[in-house]
Image (cartoon, rainbow, N blue to C red; front, side):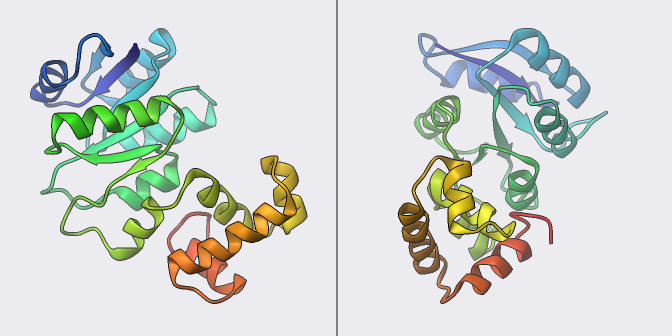
Length: 203
């Protein structure tokens, strides 16, 4: 069973999650209406997933994400957004989110998103009109491809990246080729510039 902490200052969201998710697979162990309470709940309950709204009081979702990652708390974070909001995918990604989904998504897809994040995988869907093409491209990368992109943008060589990610240099090289194809780029410099411009790593 996946244990969830839900952080959203709109009461309808936790209630909707409770009614939409299969009770045998998901259990909401805490509901929070602000970022400080969300951090405390994660530390206390040790959930598999924190379902997080970016626009919450006292400490916003980005600050919560940054604190969670700085403290190395072992929790997957799925950010939920409304269609009316500015698309927060790039900021959430940069701050350490594991997933990004829309509050109006179907119950089945929301359950899949939470389960994906609970398994330690990434789940990103470009769901709003303000989402740009690069957000969608980043969301479509596999976990391995995303990790290699980050490492390349940070200046790592094939050998260094292979050692850090427990891969072989051949696999890293193959990932570079796949990244260039998926992102429509032609060389390593383009990959690095793309990653920095889209805040995969600091510019």
